Length: 219
Image (cartoon, rainbow, N blue to C red; front, side):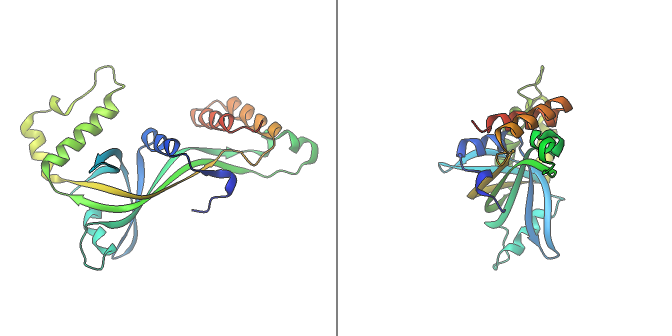
């Protein structure tokens, strides 16, 4: 990922927070037919004292088999993959810039936040691991519900019957890079104009981006 200096995000907590808030990742891997992309939610966990990202797919999804094409030994253990996490994004009109009214020198752009995680992926076929994972995943995302659903709400035999149809995925993180393109390359007055324009648009994505721009505004 090309990252101009102004847009590079290096704070590890900020990078992690983005993944936690927007956990749906695009998993990019190789297969016999070329590049593959799958969309899978991941959560942070700890394995042997280090952070890992864990997810799962249906066994019917052949991605866990095609991971073998990453390795010379044709195994799907420790396959090199890329996860892409996206945060808020949106079109930025030149009309948001006060300087455009003065000089006309402005063009449209697109603001966005993204995190790329490179690492080695292992496929897991252990029912206990998978049950623990889907329990943590469900508990995490049900926490905000008025009446949170739990894996224990489902009949035990039903859950046990489903476990063999799932393959666990665990990514050992090699590198995390982030790009926060949130108008840092604009002047103070243009940044204020972007915030005002996005707030006026009023949709959720625009308001999220307005908040990000305000966090990175020039003094």
